[in-house]
Length: 232
Ligand SMILES: [Fe+2]
Ligand SMILES: [Fe+2]
Image (cartoon, rainbow, N blue to C red; front, side, top):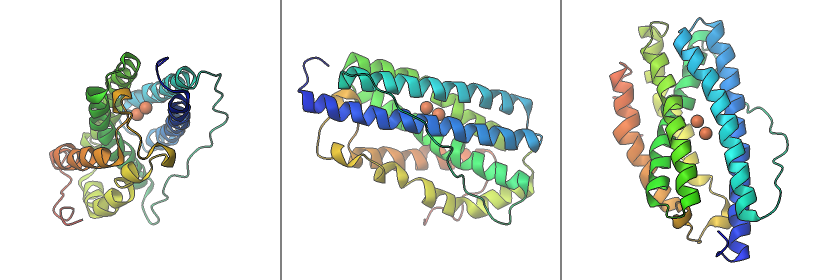
Protein backbone atom coordinates (compact mmCIF):
# COMPACT_ATOMS: atom_id res chain seq x y z
CA UNK A 1 0.00 0.00 0.00
CA UNK A 2 2.83 2.39 0.89
CA UNK A 3 4.25 1.97 -2.62
CA UNK A 4 1.09 3.32 -4.29
CA UNK A 5 0.85 6.92 -5.56
CA UNK A 6 -1.23 9.01 -3.17
CA UNK A 7 -4.05 9.75 -5.65
CA UNK A 8 -4.58 5.99 -6.09
CA UNK A 9 -4.61 5.51 -2.34
CA UNK A 10 -7.27 8.23 -2.09
CA UNK A 11 -9.42 6.51 -4.74
CA UNK A 12 -9.24 3.18 -2.93
CA UNK A 13 -9.87 4.89 0.40
CA UNK A 14 -13.08 6.39 -1.03
CA UNK A 15 -14.06 3.06 -2.57
CA UNK A 16 -13.76 1.23 0.77
CA UNK A 17 -15.64 3.96 2.59
CA UNK A 18 -18.50 3.50 0.09
CA UNK A 19 -18.36 -0.27 0.68
CA UNK A 20 -18.39 0.22 4.47
CA UNK A 21 -21.64 2.16 4.17
CA UNK A 22 -23.24 -0.43 1.90
CA UNK A 23 -22.33 -3.30 4.28
CA UNK A 24 -24.14 -1.41 7.03
CA UNK A 25 -27.19 -0.94 4.78
CA UNK A 26 -27.27 -4.71 4.28
CA UNK A 27 -27.15 -5.19 8.09
CA UNK A 28 -30.20 -2.90 8.39
CA UNK A 29 -32.02 -4.81 5.64
CA UNK A 30 -31.30 -8.12 7.40
CA UNK A 31 -32.75 -6.68 10.61
CA UNK A 32 -36.03 -5.85 8.80
CA UNK A 33 -36.13 -9.31 7.21
CA UNK A 34 -35.42 -10.95 10.58
CA UNK A 35 -38.47 -9.24 12.11
CA UNK A 36 -40.65 -10.30 9.19
CA UNK A 37 -39.48 -13.91 9.23
CA UNK A 38 -39.97 -14.12 12.98
CA UNK A 39 -43.50 -12.77 12.51
CA UNK A 40 -44.41 -15.34 9.85
CA UNK A 41 -42.99 -18.22 11.90
CA UNK A 42 -39.93 -19.10 9.82
CA UNK A 43 -37.63 -21.94 10.89
CA UNK A 44 -35.58 -21.13 14.03
CA UNK A 45 -32.44 -22.19 12.14
CA UNK A 46 -33.07 -19.51 9.51
CA UNK A 47 -33.78 -16.87 12.19
CA UNK A 48 -30.54 -17.83 13.94
CA UNK A 49 -28.55 -17.59 10.69
CA UNK A 50 -30.06 -14.15 10.14
CA UNK A 51 -29.01 -12.99 13.61
CA UNK A 52 -25.44 -14.12 12.86
CA UNK A 53 -25.58 -12.42 9.48
CA UNK A 54 -26.51 -9.07 11.02
CA UNK A 55 -23.39 -9.31 13.21
CA UNK A 56 -21.32 -10.40 10.19
CA UNK A 57 -22.38 -7.37 8.13
CA UNK A 58 -21.49 -5.00 10.97
CA UNK A 59 -18.08 -6.65 11.08
CA UNK A 60 -17.74 -6.38 7.28
CA UNK A 61 -18.55 -2.70 7.51
CA UNK A 62 -15.81 -2.23 10.12
CA UNK A 63 -13.39 -4.25 7.99
CA UNK A 64 -14.13 -2.00 4.99
CA UNK A 65 -13.80 1.12 7.15
CA UNK A 66 -10.37 -0.03 8.30
CA UNK A 67 -9.35 -0.71 4.70
CA UNK A 68 -10.49 2.83 3.87
CA UNK A 69 -8.20 4.13 6.62
CA UNK A 70 -5.30 1.94 5.52
CA UNK A 71 -5.52 2.96 1.87
CA UNK A 72 -6.47 6.58 2.47
CA UNK A 73 -3.95 7.02 5.28
CA UNK A 74 -6.36 9.04 7.44
CA UNK A 75 -9.06 8.41 10.05
CA UNK A 76 -12.42 7.47 8.50
CA UNK A 77 -15.84 7.92 10.07
CA UNK A 78 -18.58 6.47 7.86
CA UNK A 79 -21.34 8.32 9.73
CA UNK A 80 -24.95 7.17 10.05
CA UNK A 81 -26.45 4.91 7.41
CA UNK A 82 -30.24 4.92 7.03
CA UNK A 83 -32.26 1.72 6.75
CA UNK A 84 -32.97 0.91 3.10
CA UNK A 85 -36.50 1.08 1.68
CA UNK A 86 -37.17 -2.55 0.78
CA UNK A 87 -39.67 -3.25 -2.02
CA UNK A 88 -43.27 -3.45 -0.75
CA UNK A 89 -44.50 -6.10 -3.23
CA UNK A 90 -48.07 -4.71 -3.35
CA UNK A 91 -50.78 -7.33 -3.00
CA UNK A 92 -48.46 -9.97 -1.50
CA UNK A 93 -49.38 -11.65 1.79
CA UNK A 94 -46.98 -11.10 4.67
CA UNK A 95 -45.44 -14.58 4.22
CA UNK A 96 -45.01 -14.04 0.48
CA UNK A 97 -43.51 -10.58 0.97
CA UNK A 98 -40.98 -11.98 3.47
CA UNK A 99 -40.11 -14.82 1.09
CA UNK A 100 -39.68 -12.40 -1.83
CA UNK A 101 -37.37 -10.19 0.22
CA UNK A 102 -35.27 -13.20 1.26
CA UNK A 103 -35.23 -14.33 -2.36
CA UNK A 104 -33.90 -10.97 -3.57
CA UNK A 105 -31.48 -10.33 -0.70
CA UNK A 106 -30.06 -13.80 -0.12
CA UNK A 107 -30.83 -16.17 -2.99
CA UNK A 108 -30.04 -13.57 -5.65
CA UNK A 109 -27.72 -10.88 -4.21
CA UNK A 110 -25.78 -12.75 -1.55
CA UNK A 111 -25.36 -15.76 -3.85
CA UNK A 112 -23.98 -13.50 -6.60
CA UNK A 113 -21.78 -11.87 -3.92
CA UNK A 114 -20.11 -15.20 -3.09
CA UNK A 115 -19.12 -15.79 -6.72
CA UNK A 116 -18.03 -12.16 -7.16
CA UNK A 117 -15.96 -12.13 -3.94
CA UNK A 118 -14.30 -15.37 -5.00
CA UNK A 119 -13.31 -13.70 -8.28
CA UNK A 120 -12.04 -10.63 -6.38
CA UNK A 121 -10.04 -12.90 -4.07
CA UNK A 122 -8.56 -14.96 -6.91
CA UNK A 123 -7.45 -11.92 -8.89
CA UNK A 124 -6.03 -9.92 -5.98
CA UNK A 125 -2.29 -9.94 -5.32
CA UNK A 126 -1.89 -7.47 -2.46
CA UNK A 127 -1.85 -9.47 0.82
CA UNK A 128 -4.26 -7.02 2.46
CA UNK A 129 -6.83 -7.38 -0.34
CA UNK A 130 -6.50 -11.18 -0.34
CA UNK A 131 -7.05 -11.37 3.40
CA UNK A 132 -10.05 -9.02 3.34
CA UNK A 133 -11.77 -10.79 0.43
CA UNK A 134 -11.10 -14.20 1.93
CA UNK A 135 -12.68 -13.26 5.24
CA UNK A 136 -15.65 -11.63 3.56
CA UNK A 137 -16.25 -14.58 1.21
CA UNK A 138 -16.22 -17.08 4.06
CA UNK A 139 -19.12 -15.35 5.81
CA UNK A 140 -21.01 -14.31 2.70
CA UNK A 141 -21.69 -17.96 1.88
CA UNK A 142 -23.77 -18.26 5.04
CA UNK A 143 -25.90 -15.27 3.96
CA UNK A 144 -26.68 -16.97 0.67
CA UNK A 145 -27.37 -20.27 2.40
CA UNK A 146 -29.94 -18.81 4.77
CA UNK A 147 -32.02 -17.72 1.79
CA UNK A 148 -31.93 -21.16 0.23
CA UNK A 149 -32.62 -22.72 3.66
CA UNK A 150 -35.76 -20.58 4.00
CA UNK A 151 -37.07 -21.51 0.54
CA UNK A 152 -36.40 -25.19 1.26
CA UNK A 153 -38.18 -25.05 4.64
CA UNK A 154 -41.78 -26.12 5.26
CA UNK A 155 -42.83 -22.53 5.96
CA UNK A 156 -42.56 -21.75 2.23
CA UNK A 157 -45.58 -23.45 0.67
CA UNK A 158 -45.89 -24.63 -2.95
CA UNK A 159 -48.21 -21.63 -3.55
CA UNK A 160 -45.56 -19.22 -2.31
CA UNK A 161 -42.98 -20.95 -4.51
CA UNK A 162 -45.28 -20.54 -7.53
CA UNK A 163 -45.63 -16.82 -6.74
CA UNK A 164 -41.85 -16.46 -6.42
CA UNK A 165 -41.43 -18.23 -9.79
CA UNK A 166 -43.92 -15.84 -11.39
CA UNK A 167 -42.03 -12.81 -10.06
CA UNK A 168 -38.52 -14.19 -10.65
CA UNK A 169 -37.91 -12.43 -13.99
CA UNK A 170 -38.72 -9.02 -12.48
CA UNK A 171 -36.70 -9.78 -9.32
CA UNK A 172 -33.67 -10.62 -11.46
CA UNK A 173 -34.15 -7.54 -13.67
CA UNK A 174 -34.36 -5.32 -10.58
CA UNK A 175 -31.31 -6.76 -8.83
CA UNK A 176 -28.76 -8.23 -11.24
CA UNK A 177 -27.88 -5.10 -13.31
CA UNK A 178 -27.20 -3.12 -10.12
CA UNK A 179 -24.01 -5.15 -9.83
CA UNK A 180 -22.47 -3.69 -12.96
CA UNK A 181 -24.04 -0.23 -12.95
CA UNK A 182 -23.25 0.73 -9.40
CA UNK A 183 -19.51 1.19 -9.80
CA UNK A 184 -18.04 4.33 -8.29
CA UNK A 185 -17.53 6.57 -11.37
CA UNK A 186 -14.08 7.69 -10.23
CA UNK A 187 -12.75 4.10 -10.34
CA UNK A 188 -13.58 3.67 -14.02
CA UNK A 189 -10.57 3.32 -16.26
CA UNK A 190 -8.22 2.53 -13.39
CA UNK A 191 -6.71 -0.89 -12.86
CA UNK A 192 -6.93 -2.06 -9.27
CA UNK A 193 -7.12 -5.78 -9.97
CA UNK A 194 -4.06 -6.43 -7.76
CA UNK A 195 -6.09 -4.92 -4.94
CA UNK A 196 -9.07 -7.18 -5.61
CA UNK A 197 -11.25 -4.67 -7.45
CA UNK A 198 -12.69 -5.80 -10.77
CA UNK A 199 -13.55 -3.58 -13.73
CA UNK A 200 -17.22 -3.13 -14.65
CA UNK A 201 -16.78 -5.48 -17.63
CA UNK A 202 -15.16 -8.17 -15.46
CA UNK A 203 -17.89 -7.80 -12.85
CA UNK A 204 -20.62 -8.15 -15.49
CA UNK A 205 -19.08 -11.38 -16.82
CA UNK A 206 -18.73 -12.84 -13.31
CA UNK A 207 -22.25 -11.81 -12.23
CA UNK A 208 -24.04 -13.16 -15.31
CA UNK A 209 -22.17 -16.46 -14.99
CA UNK A 210 -23.18 -16.60 -11.31
CA UNK A 211 -26.84 -16.21 -12.29
CA UNK A 212 -26.65 -19.00 -14.86
CA UNK A 213 -24.42 -21.41 -12.93
CA UNK A 214 -25.51 -20.94 -9.31
CA UNK A 215 -28.63 -18.77 -8.83
CA UNK A 216 -30.98 -20.36 -11.39
CA UNK A 217 -29.93 -23.97 -10.57
CA UNK A 218 -30.48 -23.04 -6.90
CA UNK A 219 -34.08 -22.04 -7.57
CA UNK A 220 -34.72 -25.26 -9.47
CA UNK A 221 -33.20 -27.21 -6.57
CA UNK A 222 -35.81 -25.76 -4.16
CA UNK A 223 -38.66 -26.33 -6.65
CA UNK A 224 -39.02 -22.75 -7.85
CA UNK A 225 -39.36 -23.11 -11.61
CA UNK A 226 -37.24 -20.91 -13.85
CA UNK A 227 -38.93 -21.64 -17.21
CA UNK A 228 -39.86 -18.02 -17.82
CA UNK A 229 -36.55 -16.49 -16.77
CA UNK A 230 -34.30 -17.63 -19.62
CA UNK A 231 -35.39 -14.99 -22.13
CA UNK A 232 -35.10 -12.18 -19.58
FE1 LIG B 1 -21.00 -8.40 3.71
FE1 LIG C 1 -23.62 -10.59 3.19
